[in-house]
Length: 112
Image (cartoon, rainbow, N blue to C red):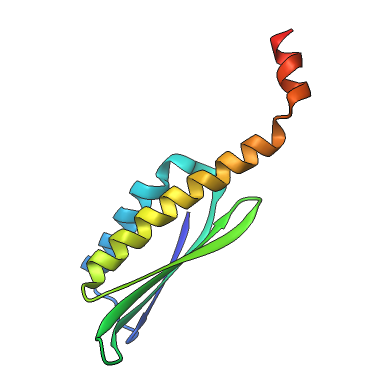
């Protein structure tokens, strides 16, 4: 897993970086080599509501990529929710790939 972090403003504290890496390794660690590039974009409080934003883009090798975005008043909570969603969605993508490879004929051949 290659992790790329971007934040507005540009500085990222080491503790925040460690938190993001730990959450993503927990959510994606079981998928091993199927995890490609991971890009995390954070932005501080914006607009009238003062919400922070966490966007995670992830590459599913070899099937493509997807993105998850979470907003909230607490940036750490938004990171946690986004990492959890990424882990669940990645698992579903892997399951879809597995299901598309197994057809009824291949199941009959295995049973024989």
